[in-house]
Length: 477
Image (spheres, rainbow, N blue to C red):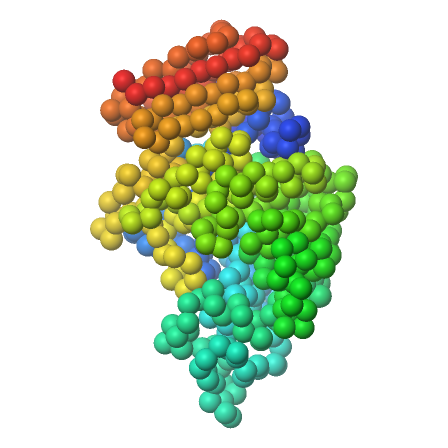
């Protein structure tokens, strides 16, 4: 098979939609699975360095080349509000052009981009990131971080509401969510979604119809709001119902006015492991086929992976949308077994996932992990046990079994063939198999064409028998 034909097949996923049984499906009817990483630069200039390579701050051609080699087919990229709209109503076209260049660079290697409004603790003035400073107007809440300990602001100081790094280091970053000022600010955002109109008009307008854009994520890890005014918002499902549903409806209408065919990702409360409060997807039933329930899994605060992923998948099915694990721990030195088990379970349930994180970038919130050591050398064990796992990324039918064993490298895929013309794709990195091309066995059923591309490490399987059960396996030599 020619390299040109392989690239045409790989890029043929076309416009995605959600279809039975709550999977992302391409225009050829293939059931799609995504593995990838988060790329979020949490401080000015709000984008990574796109020139050259370094282990902490770059996201350049070399980075994209590595991700493609490792098997990633999606990146969740933080499109930061202060970068898009640095002053109220003024869009920074240069920033969007840089983001656009990154999206194009990824898509040139068949890696899709999920564009994410990323925030943690909402703002720099709360020792986090997310909204621009103009969002607060002339207000200066000197009570932060009350009721947490520490007086951050000297009486009479009117020059800067942003704490110093030393002040922020007094508590863990996530702890600042408990500050009264933070909850009030979140609540104001939810009650005034129009404050994001310029941001979302600019982002969705810039990327409307781009084949490399998987979708838009409305907000990362939303805090429930003013929990001192309404403590019930801390109960799983309550913030979804009382706060997020209306906010998501309003934002969805803005995005879809610009990009009506876009897939929107929406998150429940981060610890909604036992109850989801949404009654419908943003926009209602007409948009079920363009909606994805985005959820995260960390331990803590989440329950063990099997139950957590199973429940999120079930909630998505009840809403008529897909489920997507957009943040999950990836294996790192000293933190290995639990993340691997989470990825095992997601793959078994055919739930796409995006690991946190590719590089530390701007070290403000998060855990500052990386797939590279301080000298820029690839930490291959971490790569192979996350994005480098063997997996089927496109299947010409409904998958019934999809299992990878990280102890042995063995892999099994079973599915019922829906379309002999559709091409099934299985990624298998040679480092799992003694630095050699592994052997793919067709245990049940047949294919009329089985090819392997040494550059992408992908098996392309065409011509399955319609309606027949098909099973393939890859084993270590």
